[in-house]
Image 1 (cartoon, rainbow, N blue to C red):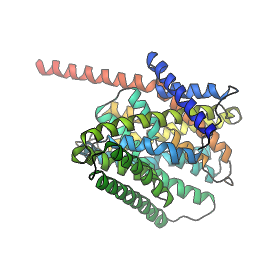
Image 2 (cartoon, rainbow, N blue to C red):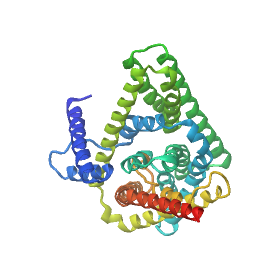
Image 3 (cartoon, one colour):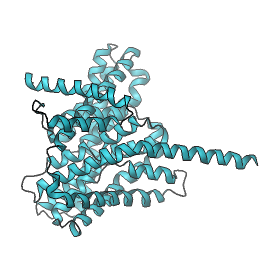
Image 4 (spheres, rainbow, N blue to C red):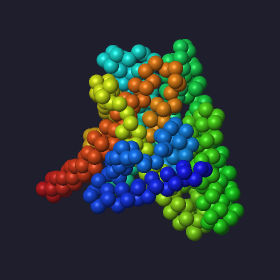
Length: 406
């Protein structure tokens, strides 16, 4: 690592710590404060020159964020909700992407290849943005589990859809059999990578009580599962989710030492804070560099169809569980709809598009516009929506008790 790069990262982490203090004092979502700060930094002459690239997001920043989120998911709770999570993370992504692609083609005027690629990369909710917003709002319980789990698991579907879309844009004829085989391969490969790395890490952790060594194995597991899966063209996010789930549900209960458990939890909380801070600061710095004026009408269309696509994914699919024990209340559906934020994952896919793709630069700029809307419009209003939902639930419960008492 070059000294200049290390100095720039250190400066950004220092800025992030100050932003965190100010954001909490003024009750502002941390992610919003970071993006605003990043936009301001981009206009200053001595701003750190760190570019937000696909490699930086995928190879450095995503693994710790994904691993830390999965580490705290409890399988006994997740298993009860898995039918909903998988439905939203698969069919939901496909429905949303289709609505966006059709809208951008017929209304936005994009060629089918560009519209399909954009629909595939922007359809999945982003785990980084979603988790940051839920933590800022201090959301707990079933609603947080549903929103967070969906955002973690829908990457697998998005990765397959994106790969198919890129092939389609290059003129390759894609058959349904190819798509089905690719889906199974990506999922199975990611599961094997994540489970295999987690199993090795747990085996080694069980043979030491040195908390530093235990901590090292979790760090290796987070990055190795992600990088191995990506190297083999599987889903790195899904592999790291699996590794985090296995280690988080097995490690603290009999494998990690007491000191090791405390060290692991403290370290990953800090690692997620640093990675999260860098992601949003860099997003803000890149947002300030985009020429939105040149494509402002296309950005408006994109925001419209991204919103409609999310609604088409959440409300009809939630209706499938209306008569079961997994029923999603109307208030929870509203939160799922508005909590479908986009962020670093969509930008990583956009920035990694082939240079020969038609309208590539336009797709990247519009993707940044959608992410900006997610951060500011949804990020700032989501806490209020969640508080309103909480108040509605309390009023409903009070009314029910009154009726029962009459």
